Image (cartoon, rainbow, N blue to C red; front, top):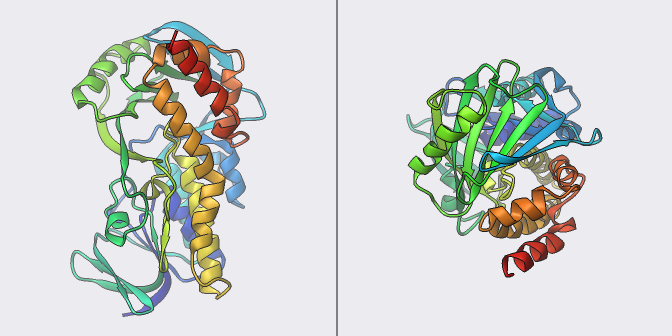
Length: 378
């Protein structure tokens, strides 16, 4: 049984990013992916252009759309159009293209991939980890990156990550054709969805549509009913497209994201934004930070991986703590939130700055929450 430096479980954006940077640093990296091919993923594909700072290669070639305008509505009425500031571009990509691009660059740097490889167990054996497949293959490594998404069982098994996982419920639809959604324009609908919102992001030759609920666990049929109203407003038949339902782990408090030689990244670490459902930026950022921590640990510069948890807390968690508070108030009082939040002249720019990483929720949270609660109590 050969021993390698790091095994990465999952070939999505977070795992691929970690693999690339570790392989680039000269580490022996093996990616284990349960799916034989890249499947269509229930991801809207919205991504801040600022993530390009995490890669020395270009990713612009896979960008389907650059968003210049955001349209908002409440119960399909009271529309608001807002131009995004040029300093905070927002990209739309297809997840399968992004994941494949990063994986290929990781392979170019020496990383290896085994697919399909369905992990049945992970065990700590002395100074190493042992990963076992469903067909009894065994692979040893010094370090492990858990990057297998929102359905990952390993955080609980390894006793790291959130003690209580908070799941958002989503339905995604990828449609052919553009309907009435224009190039460079995205749409957010509040009011139709209880405790959440609906969105529409343009692709080169289609549209990604989704519905998400971020407080509680609603019946799936309710979100399907939302699509029956939302899709016609976009110029599509109410039954168009194939529905993909998924549960998405969102941020739910500060927790250790590391153990002895192991780290959680991306959705497996419950890093998704609890207010705007942004998942790609934290996935890529956490993969990058995990690679730095593991490289230092493997080189003997640090005794443990605690610096990874600390950096994620500072760079992401502190903002998400405020984002969670905003979500709890906004989605319980969406009409007030729409009037006092979205309709404010500065709101679109603030949203763009948050998505781009130029601003955190903490910069606006206290006055937003006070404004919402004060007006609701009248």
